[in-house]
Length: 385
Image 1: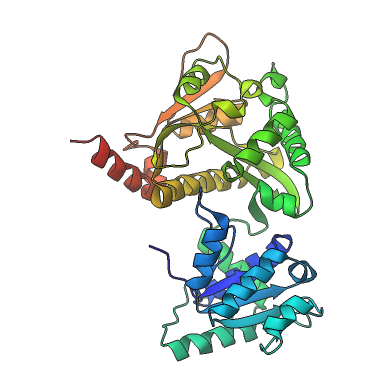
Image 2: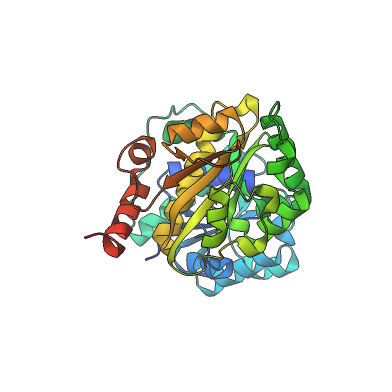
């Protein structure tokens, strides 16, 4: 069943910061938003998810910029919303003239000026959606109300984000494809990963053995784009993780220490396109030293959320998770997760966590109760008594 939402936010990935700001402000004021890539289900068809989301909203908000003006994908979204007779609101956070193609659909739509004063524009946008919701008979429930009235809209957004998630709002987590759309190449991203890994592994022997080649990983992550997540702070990559579902025979070799990162190729990876349970290789979370206070837990929480989405939306589960700790920090994280260190013929720190059945005690069972519930139910239905 599709989750109910009020608004579809149409935007360019190059304006991701604006979409996050608008989405956060609206949701803090009781307006449920659907925004890509946050609400894209893992393993699903991107275009199909867009069509369903537009079909299931009552208001379509276009975050107008020079990038949306030339985007064929955005133009397709506008046309879908127009044909569906949704309320369409162009939010002009940049002072530009709409392209002829988009003007055809939007010329008679009431625009909201967000470029002269962003705060005022957000307030007008909220009011317009609230009025439409009232006309439709929808209830408006704000999730966070104890925010000072004298703060600006952007300050309100920051305060609300901190109150809701208790993390620094300057951090963002992206898919590789999002950063590519912002101007980076796959190879450039992988080279930044390599730099972070080398800094993380400083002082350890055999550094190159576990890193692999940037082009090798660019090809793998390009083939499996929804399994890589990147932590960005002030427009700089400061951390990352990735996970891959492995074919059983290769996963056993990883557990024995016979396959390292530089050996991994596309043929070893399970596509996991259909429901089922597969072993999972999780690359050690790599975060620059100066971002260790918040970075690792943000990435770990994000990874668990990905597993929840796979389980809930796709009925795809991880039977067990294997990782290689390449630093003391990685080793400490594995121990906190109560992962078992495997005995291998090398000095590599290889850890394993069985997820089916799901751990009933420890950090992961206490912190990630939703994942535990999903996995417990799957285990009971397929393996339990």
